[in-house]
Length: 118
Image 1: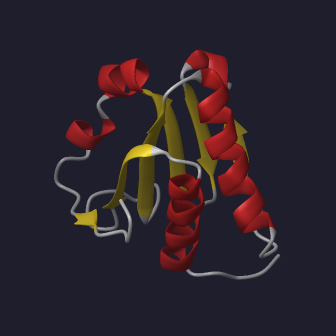
Image 2: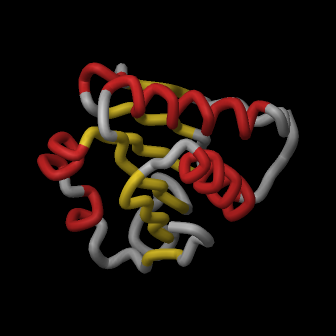
Image 3: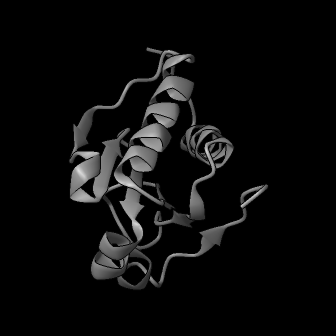
């Protein structure tokens, strides 16, 4: 497996998600407030199929660099797919599920990282 920086991973994943028209993409720098990961990528899809397309695009983009998730959880039909890359957690939601879990509010002390195109 290729060793990539957390910053590099999250930026490549964000680009892949945005290329598939993910909505409301936010990258949170949680290094100062969590020992779980360095970054959270949070974005939304408009349907279960769209959530699947976005999460598949993130996986494919990182896999092309030899980077595979340590763990994946959820199915698009549940409204939330989590891809765990160790230092970066990718959350792809349906809007209703995202509003329910409100990760941005939960991690409100974490600064947002500007991402080109979001």
